[in-house]
Structure formats: structure tokens, C-alpha cells
Amino acid sequence: MNDTGSRRFFTDRRDAGERLLERLRHETLVDPLVLAIPRGGVAVGAVIARGLGCELDVVLSRKLRAPHQPELAVGAITETGVVHMTRELGAWAGVSDAYLEAERNRQLAEIDRRRTMFRGIRPQASVAGRSVILVDDGIATGSTMIAAIHTLRAAGAGEIFVAVPVAPPERLDEIRSLCDKLVCLQAPLDFMAVGQFYERFDEVTDEAVCDLLRSSLVHHVIP
Image (cartoon, rainbow, N blue to C red; front, top):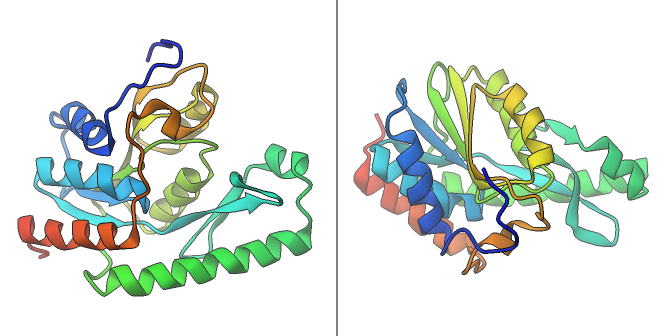
């Protein structure tokens, strides 16, 4: 994980997924399942799931946005209601209890909308006792990933692999302490945003996520 300045490490999310796949191919996995964080993570996770011949599903974790800075996450919430707060960012951003409650409700409403859409394509995968590969297209504050890890632990995942193309180095120690194995291809010192390290970082639409989930069912039959 070398710092190489501000160069772009990945052509696109498919390229990132292929590189992660190469790192995961030789792992010993028990009934593996790829769980991707929508929406960008699904484009990465679909490549990994197809390469490993395993199931692809989503884990619904949403960032809690800072007031007046929607790109900054002060925490995250999952579909089970688990909240993880990045406390130092929350204090710095001046997050009040009233704002946090309103933002929590907004993100739960979005999670519910996505759950209705995505679960209409495939039922939620069981994680109990399985090797779960938790994927996103990158980590910024780490809040959504950490909230997802806690949810998977509570659901009885056998082991949790976190697989991401890029992340700021200061966020990796906490995530590494929570999962069983962390695969991160690049941890540049000049990290400012995930998209900074992709040549193409187009928005992934809901429709694209649905298409990827449908395609995964063609290649893997749910038991």
C-alpha cells in the first residue's frame, strides 16, 4: 500500500473489482457470500461474486450526513437500525441531537425504499456461519463499513472479509480490528475522496444495481 501521490490507481469499478478478486481467489472460504454496499460497491462486488462463483447481495448501510456538508459522513445507520457515530467528526460539524434524529429518519426512509426495490429482485441472503466478503468502492470516513460490520456480527456471520480498493490509512486500523481480514489495495496519504483515485467514477444508478443483482442470479442459483 504505497503512497504514489495523486495518480489514479483504477480505471473504473470493474477494474477495481478484478484486482480485489485476484487477492481473494486463494482464500479458504466457507459458503462464501459477497455483500456490497450500494450503490458503487455493487459494481465492484458483482465482479468478485462472479469470479468466485458465489452469491451477491447488498447490505443496506447509509451515511449520516453533516449539516450543510452532505458529502461528509458523521456516522452511519443500517437497515437494522444500528448506528455508528464518528464522534470527532460529529462534534466538529456541530451535530445536534435534533438534527441527528431527523437525519436518522431520512436515511431510514431511503434504506426502506432501497430494501423494497432490491429485495423484490432477490430475498435477503442468510449470513449465519458463512464467509462474508463485505465490499465497497472505497472507504472515506469508514462509518458505513463499520456499521455494516456490526450488523453482520450480530447476524452471526462466520467470518468477515472487508475488501475495498482504496481508503485513507488512518481509517484502516479500526476496521481491521473489527473484521477477520482486511484487503485494501491502496491507502494513499493524499486521500481526499474515493473518486480521486479512479479514472472513471460515474454515478451508479438504482437501475444499474438492479441489473447487477439480476445478472448475478443467472450465474448463481440461490439454494
